[in-house]
Length: 455
Image 1 (cartoon, rainbow, N blue to C red):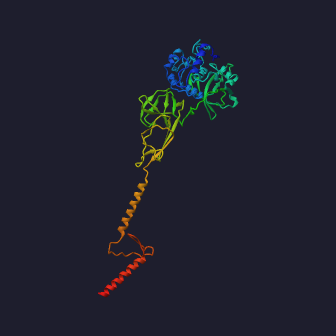
Image 2: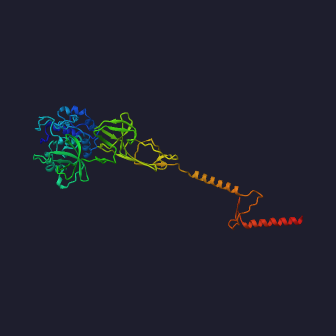
Image 3: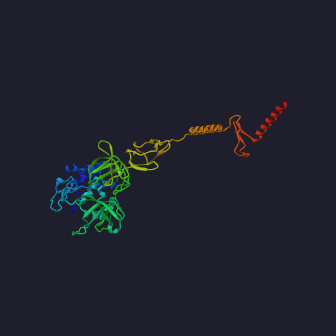
C-alpha cells in the first residue's frame, strides 16, 4: 500500500468545500464521479440514502450501500461489476486521484484501496475531515494520526491488547500475519458492532471487493482501533446483523434475486422478483418479512433473511389480538399497512383500540400515528336494553305464575301437607295469610248454617 496523504492544492480545497457546503439529505458524490460508476447499481444505492447528521449511522449506511462492489482491471471497470478483476481499479480511488503504488499499474486509479474506501465513505457521509485526519489512503499513516495527533480532535487509538471493546463506527486496523514488511498495519475496515467476544466489520479490498467480516476480539490479525468524535443525532438504533426484531428502513439485498410475495409469508402467492445487490425501503415489518412498494404502486412482501439492514426509521408498533392469535407489525412513521386477513367471531364488530374508538376490519389499510393494540370488539349492552330485558323477564314470570293457578271452582289437593311458610299464597294484590283464609272459611260456614235453618 502506498503511503500517501492527499490534502494539497486546489483538488483538496474543492473536496473540503463540497463537504462543508453539503446539506443533510439524499447523498450525491462529494466529487466528480466517473460516468461508469454513475451508471451502476452502487451509485443508485448511494443515492437512496438520506443523511441524518449522525456521523456513525451515515458512514455505515454509505459503506453498506456499496456491498458487493468488485475491483477491476482498468478504468473501464469502475462500475464495480467485474467479478474477476484483481488489479485494484475502483471508483473509490477516483476521489483521491491517480497514484503509482509500484505494483505495475503505473500512475492510475489501480492501487490498494482499503483505506481509500473507508475515507470515501466518511467523505460521502459528510463527516468533517478534521475529525478523521484528512484524506488518507495509507493505513499506517492513518494509524499514526490517531496515535499522535487525533487527541486534539477528540479521536483516540486503542491497541488490541488494551482490552478495549470497539464501538460502532470505529476504524479497525489489521496486519497480515504473514507480512514481510515493517509497517504497523496493512489493512483497515469499519466496525459495525461488537458482541459476544466478536467484532463485525465492513471492509473494502478484502477478497477484492466490499464485504462483511467477523473476527474474535483476540485475533492477532487485529492491530487496534481508531475512535472518531463523530457528530451525533437522534436516530433509531440499527442492528446490522439482525436475524429478528427487524425495523422499517433501508435494506440491501445479497447476491440472489429477491422473491416478492402477496403476503408476509412464503406460503402466499409469489408475484414477482427483484434484482440483487439493490437497496430497498421496507415500510412495514411483520415477522421476518418486510413490505415494499413495487413500481406499479402495489405492495409486496420480501423475506428479510438474506438482506442487510442499512438504516432504521421512526416507527410504530401495531398488535392485533383476537384471542386465539396475536399478530404484531412494525410500521414506519407516515407509512400504511394492510391489516392481514383473519377470522373474527360472527358476533364481532371488528378490531378496536378502546371502547368507543374507531373500528377496523381485516383487509383494511391502517396508517398508525402511535403504538396501537387492537382487540376484538363486541356489541355493548346499553342501560335501556338492560331495563327492557328485566321487564320482559318479569312479564314472563307473571305469565308462568298465572298459568299455575287453579281455575275458578277447581279444588287443589296438595301432595303433601303445607308448612306454615308454604301456606302463604300469592294473590294479585299481595300476600294472603293463612289466618285470613281461615276467617273467610268460618264466615262461609256460618252463612251456610243460617241459610239451612231459615229454609
